[in-house]
Amino acid sequence: MTGALRAAALPLLVFGLLAAAPFLGLGAGWAMTLLARAMILGIAALSLWLVVGGAGLVSLGQAAMLGIGAYAVVVLDAAGVTEALVVTPVAIGAAALFALATGAVAMRTGGVSFIMITLAFGQMAFFTASSLAIYGGDDGYTLYGRSTVAGARWMQDRLAFHYLCLGLLLGSFLLCRMLLASRFGRVLRAARENALRAQAVGFEPYPYRLVAYAIAGGIAGLAGFLLANATEFVAPSFLAWQRSGDLLFMVILGGLGSPFGAVLGALAIVLLEEWLGHLTQHWRLIFGPLLVLAVLFLRGGLVGLGRRHG
Image 1 (cartoon, rainbow, N blue to C red):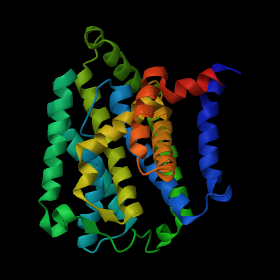
Image 2: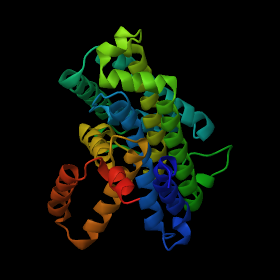
Image 3: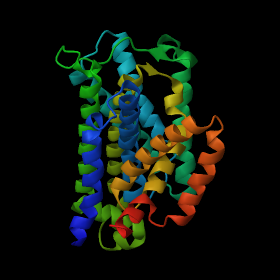
């Protein structure tokens, strides 16, 4: 098997299984809800991978973009606007603009300073959401229905919503792959490896990283739109730094070498949480050490493990 086929085999298998899942005994309500959540978090993890794996910058503020996308749904719902063809671009645009504005400051730093600045901006967004009494404040905001599409409510159908999440997950994955393979992506990777060398050959890393951060924010905003519709409830906890930490762990567990690692990491963590939760109420005592062992011994993450056995 050639290298290209081997690299494509695992994504094709996983996306194929997700497409067939409703017909393989996972068509029950709880299973469809679980898979939708896993795929939505996969989109959010992909957005963070673009920053971490693509640009080489570790962010603890990605949940802010996710939450802004979700709160865009809330703000428009309160104004009586539920049309997805309107809500989705607003959610993506609001999250991308937040990423662009905060990234313009954060990208002038690096290392620990970048981590702390993104964390600070994320916490600012979290406390702002908590103070919005008109949208529920700390108690959150309940949506009494999912967004409509051209006036129709087909997003209420679990099967239709499953394939919507799958299609957008696949689209986000292909977008990240395309960006990585483009000239833009090659500059990003060069700056990740050695920023001074990239500058020496005429490429200033700052604008490339800022654009990547804004694109990542837009993808996270899309995930926020889907998450708000999946849960039909939005709360400030969507923006908490702990959720950014969860997304970062998904990226690391899946593997930084490929955008598919973020997808695989999200699916693995969500499904493992669910499985352990059915075994014992003390599942976190098992879950934590398992994740630590996975990071220590799975060099290259789950993607690397799949390729070694492919």
